[in-house]
Image 1 (spheres, rainbow over the protein chains, first blue to last red):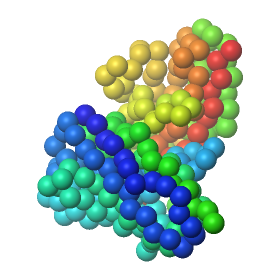
Image 2 (image 1 turned 45 degrees about the horizontal axis):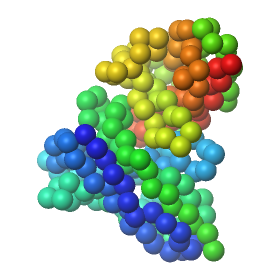
Image 3 (image 1 turned 180 degrees about the horizontal axis):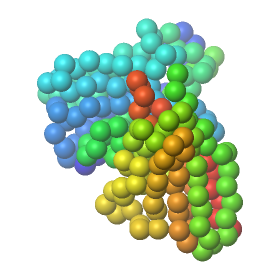
Length: 120
Length: 105
């Protein structure tokens, strides 16, 4: 069971970036997937989630990213995405994808994270 | 919005019991999870549904939740338990506590 994030990097304020999270070892298409971020030296912050396609594939986001970030999934590729627009310096941090595979709302599988730095 | 409050730090000697608290309005009515995060690593789930341990988590980790406070207890803390610990619950969205840095020395 594995999650592997990619796509992070250095981006200027106002720019856009797309993160990817490849999943393996479990049935991705029925999994509810989440993004969690962590600013340098700070705590964990939930970014948002996407339900499984069979549950409607609906999304929810934390207030600071609503309207700027979009979570999507491609079940044929076992891949989760996070599209980030209008990036701000406060979006800097490590972005983790995670899922509650066994128990609802208990995140038992985490990726290694990918670093996003928003700076001019 | 719902908030979870944790003490920023806790220090115990090896072999002592560490109790990390997490406070929130009527938290006892919600399921609480706890995560351990060591420097440079991803979080690891150590307690879910208030008191259950995932496979592979040592028995010295236990949890409780009642009233407005959930507690993660590490009985006989070891040097390897030194880490940041986060509580988490679900309101209308996922909420994490601010984290507690546990020092064992």
